Length: 467
Image (cartoon, rainbow, N blue to C red; front, top):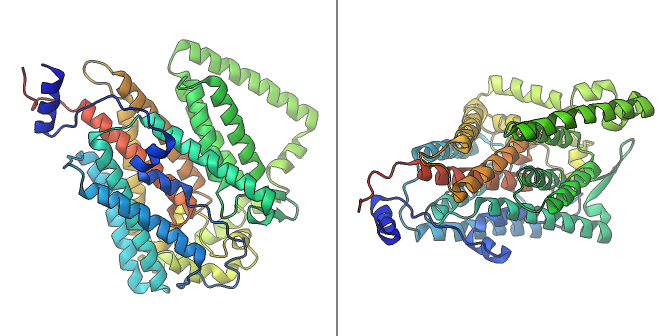
């Protein structure tokens, strides 16, 4: 069968024609896949005390909030317009199932508007949630017929993170108060403020670079340099949860790489032994007490055990949900309920919005137990499907494009794993208008898009006409 006949047969059967994707420049890439523009946030050069004295559970408007909402609406409108003119697609049932849970979750957020203490805020954020979901659906439909180089998607995400890192450093030079805070006993912490979330973009840089280094997906010198940039950037933030999450993800990555060959296993074992010897030597020379105080930022044991007071908030949310299983109202509920207790909290000095400091507790507080069940199911199904497709093999072996897709899928799953781990100490991963929310959703879009490509490659072409 000729290539033209195969393409015609694929289209008639409802299968996209697989063609080697062409590399795109950064600007053309963003124009082609506008969902990646969401990863910029966008940067908001707003003072840290902008919300001081403002009840953020109620509707309020300023230049930056209008800019943020306008940015999201513009990208979503662009994506929906592309979706409207796109050819019909046959999204695999597995992907449809995950998207259905995302829709069900959004419906619960909309229902919570009826009992929210700030119905305007809940309604606005519900709209933003569905706009973001529409971007994901449009992306999946877009890549159905013309799949990109999936590793290029991750490279572009890393480049966006690097641009934002430069923006933070620029703000540090011009207006330090925008991006850093001084905490008594813990010193200076470069968190990025409203310009960019350092404890999210730096791990993304490190994870993608480490993955590319181990699997030789780009120049190893470049990967090593960018990995160091990500690690140093995260160390400056002094966000302990992000450091632990990154360590766990890198451990999973290295162990997975060590299973690929005997040579890799030997290198892994040797590196582990050498690292253990170095660690013992460092502890013996410096002293365990100094290392421990550096790690826990001079906190006492009680603060460590309560996760800097977070466990008290989580218990409050669980107890409230036992008597109000429907939740408090999307976004506005927890802000209204917890705001008085955030008067002297570190996160209040950054955002003054309150919250649960936990993505899962945030969903529970927003719309109750059913919403938490939908969110967990959606994430579990995404990870399970991605892992299965990453390891799957077509009947006649993998082509170069399929190998690249599997590599990108594996890296994206590690990024999502980091988001879920870091979400244990931060609620911004499930809060619209927060950069972490859009980073996590862009990563989800990449996983679902790459999974669609793998499902199409594995699907039997029995309906295609033969020669």
